Amino acid sequence: MSRIWSAPLATRPKTLDPNEYFNLSPDQRRAEDARAALRANLKRTYQLQLNNPHRAELIEDPALTRWVYARANPYPHFKATKKTSLLGAMFGVVPLFVLYYVFKTNRDNKEERIKAGTLERKFSLSS
Image 1 (cartoon, rainbow, N blue to C red):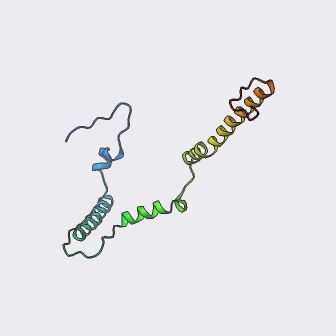
Image 2: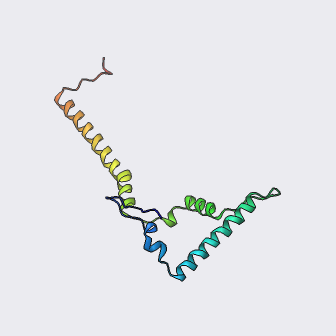
Image 3: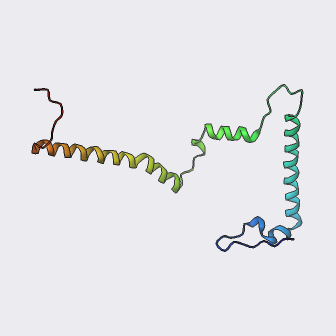
């Protein structure tokens, strides 16, 4: 068996831990075997449907159906976290304040130049 060395700045994943890999209880082994048998049965059923030359209907893929439903209805499954709150503030609230500041300072500077008489207006209606 080959020896696996851990990287100096990274931890070893649990799936590569020899104690987790080889020292399994019989119950854990049975549960893993049952999950593997279920996956194999689902895969075999899907392959039989996919390769059926006389197929007349579409193949229903439950994983794809769940994914499409989750993409179409994101709000019932939305979970507010620090990341989503920060992104919402960065893309929703901060641009409003930035635009307000830019327009307000531009207008204030223009008013100051008009009052001081230093604004050179390019188009004049009274010429």
